[in-house]
Length: 101
Image (cartoon, rainbow, N blue to C red; front, side):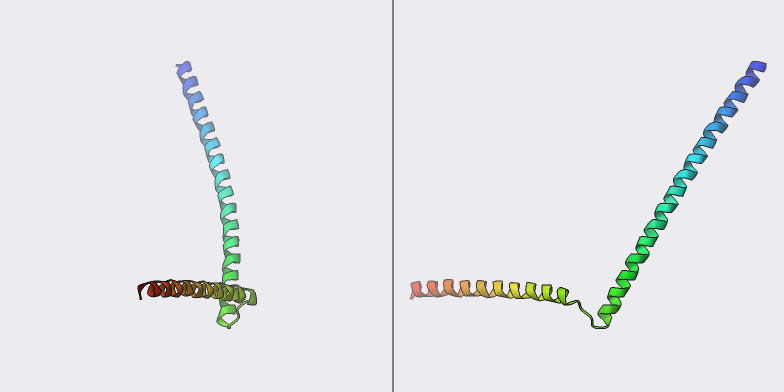
């Protein structure tokens, strides 16, 4: 009977030790996750502040010159390509027309 009590006592002790280790590990992981979530929230707050500032600047009619210049350059380049394509089409049509009649 004493061997059975010793076996049960040892089993209970091992179960409690494993449970304690598991609880400690889970709390440590939870603490780390909370810290990461706080960092993400801080980063989100900074991003939202920046987005709100840009939105407010745009609402006031402000556009950075560099952004406008790059956009206008892209537009000019696209228009030039379209003109060049149109000229090439007109030349090929003129050549076809000359061959036909």
